[in-house]
Image (cartoon, rainbow, N blue to C red; front, side, top):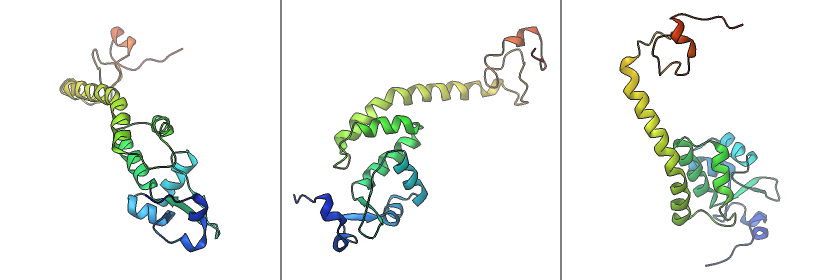
Length: 159
C-alpha cells in the first residue's frame, strides 16, 4: 500500500486526482448537498484542507464517513451522538467494517428502545379520537402527563 502524505495531496498537480476530492465531487458521490458537507465540517464530523488554489479538498475516505453519518441520521441519532462516535475513529483512515460493527452495536439498545416506544404508540392509536384535546380522561398519545385530566375535560388556565 502506498502511503500518501497530506502535503502531496495539497499540490496543484494532485488536486484533481483520485487522491483527493473537491466538495462538489464528494457531494455528488455521497448524494448530499454541498451545504450539508459544510455543516458536517463545521460540526467537526468531517475534515478538509485547502489546496494551493484555496479549494476545499477531501480525502477519499470522507465518502465512507459521510455514509456513516447519513446512516446514523436515518437511525434517528442526534448529531452530537454521531460526533461522539466519529471521535473514536482514527482521522487518518476511512471507517472499516469492524468500526461500523462497534459503533452500530453501541446504538442498538437506543434503537430498540425507540422501536418499542413507537410500537406502543402505534398500538395506542385506536384509542385516540384525534381531536387534539389535551384533557381527555385517558390520552396517552397527545398528553400523557396531564394531571388535570382527573378534574374533567377541557382546557385549564394555569395561574
